[in-house]
Amino acid sequence: MQNVSIDYFAIFLQFCVGAGFVITTMLVTHYVGPKRKTSDKLASFECGIDSQGNARLPFSIKYFLTAILFVLFDVEVIFMYPWAVNFKALGTNGFIEMTLFVATLLLGFVYIIKKGALKWE
Image 1 (cartoon, one colour):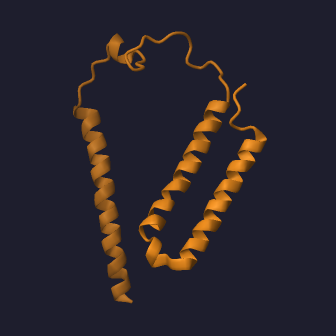
Image 2 (image 1 turned 135 degrees about the vertical axis):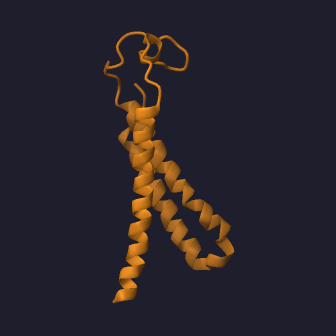
Image 3 (image 1 turned 90 degrees about the horizontal axis):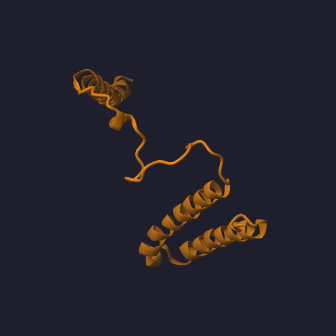
């Protein structure tokens, strides 16, 4: 029973050191760092272009939907890289599993196309 508690103590100690470092760094930079609030620093900055109008104006949800779908399918494609690297080692089973994975991915893509999620009006 003692060996188990020693293993957890090492993890707990590492967590405490990590949390202590983060908290110490945040406190030191907050109290020691410069605090010059000028109008230039408080102004919003967007790639060097002067801001125009209110940033809280509503805009189409299509932007968010397109971004979420891009991230979703991009992450799904990332799963294909380890499969391609280990293609020969996985054999027929790996090929069948990846075929099912790609079929599911394509089924989802056909669904969002049919729903018109990527149509811009």
